[in-house]
Image (cartoon, rainbow, N blue to C red; front, top):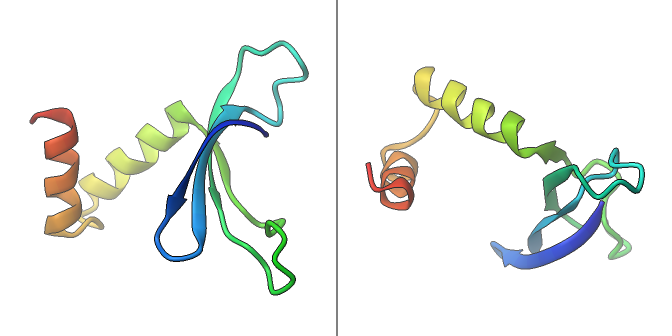
Length: 82
């Protein structure tokens, strides 16, 4: 991923948005990534990177399966105005 936006997340982590690692230089594919750091302070190799359509599908499935807390659902409703 080539990050174009980074923001702190929780205590020591980050959320990044940018050009996807599978984009191959076309600058067409965007993704979001949850970044956490290993013991040496480097970005962990296991950090997940997702295309946005998969992210939306994952959240929808979690909601349908009642995996989100009431606070998480409220946050989604606040964001989307539902």
